[in-house]
Image 1 (cartoon, rainbow, N blue to C red):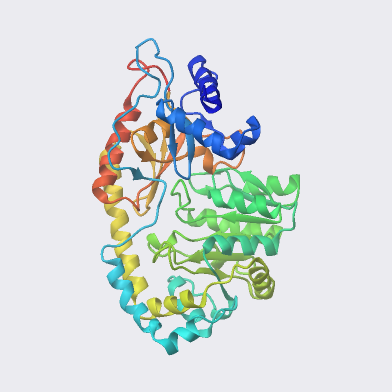
Image 2 (spheres, rainbow, N blue to C red):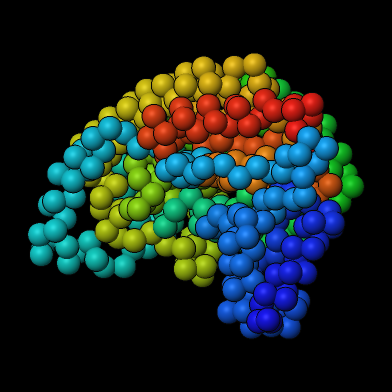
Length: 448
């Protein structure tokens, strides 16, 4: 018998005896190969054999999960195979407005003239151009706030903007306070920069100031990273009284903050934290959600005395925006394309929230009428990993709650549902299927 089949037999035995439980994620194939002392190609054949036997299910970009186990008392498998229709990815979450390509294309056409293209393909500084700074200021303006153009910097996307600010603020080994559930890529950025993330408690109104103060007393924080508007994954928006309390605390502690406003465009404009703590707040935003992820720009609004330091971090990190993208952004903003897309995407998010409410009625779903994602606290006895695997068995990708958890011991039995990317009929079908899966009770089947 081939070596890879003998290894697959041992994994199958672990599943049969319960050493590997339904929904449990197997190691990445490279890690599996290193642990077993086998070639990566052999590990790939092992995983392929387990898929062929119906014991695991693999999802590109997410991993491989145990799918089946011996029958329980009801005679059913712990995670039942199901016919997979067209896969629906509720991990992706990029809003797209109807007719979006038709809106964007005319603005890009002039950039393709050879004389204009030559300029658009030249390198761009972190400070961009005067026209780009004015355009970004107009995009970010709210009724109570207009960022000064000279405080604007540009990166390739908002993720790079977060990395640049943190790199400029925090030395390796430094501590950054974050909400207990936070944007997963912030965890990756912190790991690469050698930064320790400190989870901070919050409530329905937002991050608790006393949690920040207590963490800072334990060991000084170098900065905070917050998502006050449409927090990812819970969709919570910090109340104005809480925002004022946090601003006062920042002043008292002289504590810098990174304010991530990437989803704020979906809500009626509200004042950012930067209004109340302008000397300490570094605002991060961008065009990936407002416009499209394929040709995007990250925006940074930084305190005046921080412009040079953050610009240096952008340059040294190789995070500068492309000049072509900057030129496109200037035209999209100036001709009203961004504003039209924002209006269309707000209407789209509202429609998708209605679908969510109709299909998941009766479940503990936290969201916002303006949001394009939702946080689903799963009914017992479901766990996040098991439900994620069960969803994958039905051709539906969701993001398990632990992906957002900062503390390893905090593993919420919840999933995030990205509502923006799937066509609306597919979204409705997927949510209806997930509702049927979640509604199964312990009496109907062996617990997940």
